Amino acid sequence: MEHEMSQLEQWQLTAEAAELYERYPATYILGPWAPLLIDAAQSLPAVVGAPVEWLERSAVDLRLPSADFDVVFCQQGLQFFPDRLVALREMRRVLKPGGRLALSVWTGVGPYHGAVGEVLDRCIGNAVATKFCASRQVPSRAELRRLATEAGFSDVEVRVRRLDIRLPRLKDFVPHHLAATPVAPFIAATDSETREEIGACVLQRLQRFADGDGVTYPEETHVLTAVGG
Image 1 (cartoon, rainbow, N blue to C red):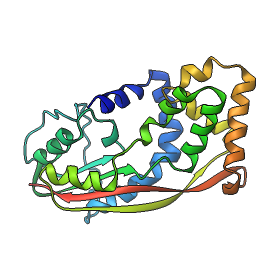
Image 2: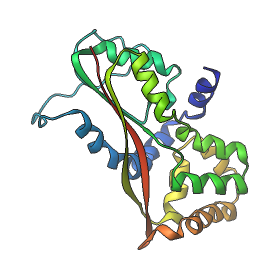
Image 3: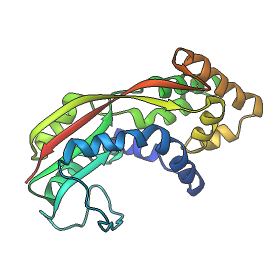
Image 4: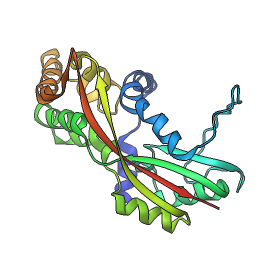
């Protein structure tokens, strides 16, 4: 629990960083995975003009009616929850009998985050590199299966899915991405030469994935599907 709380505390964003997060990592790194996760749980076409209600709740205390939802999606969130088992039990509680869960977490650090982590470790320090990579400290495939089963889900399946992720010009993308993460203050405290070096070194490490003025690299995620109720 202490490790999970520490990891959660490492990934808090300012308002400005949150906006940058939506523009850069959410668009380029997370966005391509959303259709895949939806396909994993829904077999019916979306209803045109369906109303959307946005609610903000704690993952471990949803404060929503029991057995009220057909599907629960959770994309790259489980690793941040302070108690993963309690969060999964909450997901199962709000599902109707036979309702579906589709959840994803990364399989590991991945080529891009690994490269950025290595460069941050060398240019700034291990603590900053660890903070940046906190979102990639995820449960294993076996742990995912165990947690979902212990939470009361049935028909639990965990598959590895792979996509090619394209990022634009890294010398521009990397500093914008870092500014959208909790390491932003540490990056801002460096001089301009160091900031330029970080982008250049990440590009050098990912040169084998060069694609025009950007990079295209393989990324993998675990996709867990299960039935609640």
